[in-house]
Length: 154
Image (spheres, rainbow, N blue to C red):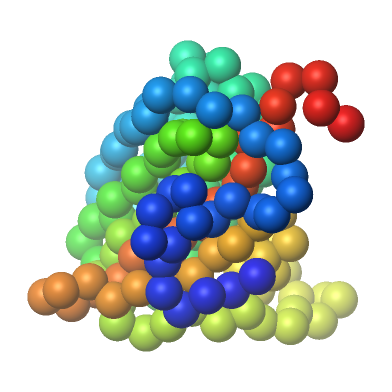
């Protein structure tokens, strides 16, 4: 579900009725140059953080979302760099990607033969909520949330 404003807090992003784990806030950030060769560094940082925080069940989805959002920021923003933040707090994972573009992200309907254009479609499908917000001074943050399932919950 896309929202053009961020959750006021990580807690607001909780999906009603979904059991989520609770725990202290964990956070990481990584800044990379706008070069697609550096996207692997973001994937590795997200994997490492989730392993340290003991939430491996989110790794595949968050790594894919980070990959897509960072690649979009590099391809379309014209920024010299991209900042990625990930936090897990009170059962919600919040992924944020900052870039220098002011344009809002738009989900494209890629054709069967298109080689790209599915990134935001994937983010929309995998996340509980996602959206963007303008940054003071220019640029934007694109964010996505996922609930952290309680261990053993069906």
